[in-house]
Image (cartoon, rainbow, N blue to C red):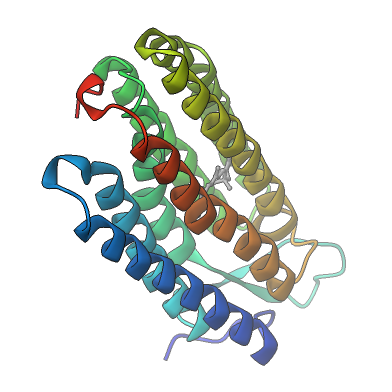
Length: 244
Ligand code: RET
């Protein structure tokens, strides 16, 4: 058994994590069932959603079972005793797989040039991995990593709201509209993640239970809600115009 952290989730926190796990898994099965009703050429976005929801299900299974966290000696006022907080690194392993897939799901329907897609994938990895390293660093250097991660997120916005919007408009007004709605929704939800990080892994202001609620709601909005809605929008478009 891993060493226990002084500050970690309680039983209610674990119940909530099981509930999020159940929603991820159910949406995953729903996506699979929907996919099988479609011809092979129209399954790309369903595949990506299934990768995302399967990964998230396993991550939530881990956290609900109190696994995938490690004690880190956190700095905060009055911590002379050197208390440790559970840092849920399994979250970042989930994100390093799922966030590039979410971005792909978004931009594969825009005809964005490959060079921009590679840049998106790269900055997304920078964002998540700096977040992981920053969370595991006990000293205030963690904020240096956080700053690199935020810079990467800003670059992601620039690509999504610049070149990707432009190329979706070139495919036609129905593409532009579907893309715009999804891109604005995703950009807004993703902005809340660094705020949660700052309050939890960063400054240790909220408890791990509150952290689970904050990230849990965000993860439900960013994965099941986003994928169902986005894939529905996309499934009504002309796939032959997309380079899949
Ligand atoms: C971190 C900390 C470093 C700075 C920034 C972050 C942003 C994380 C984001 C995560 C998105 C996760 C999603 C999960 C799916 O459910 C790593 C918290 C900017 C945007 C969408």
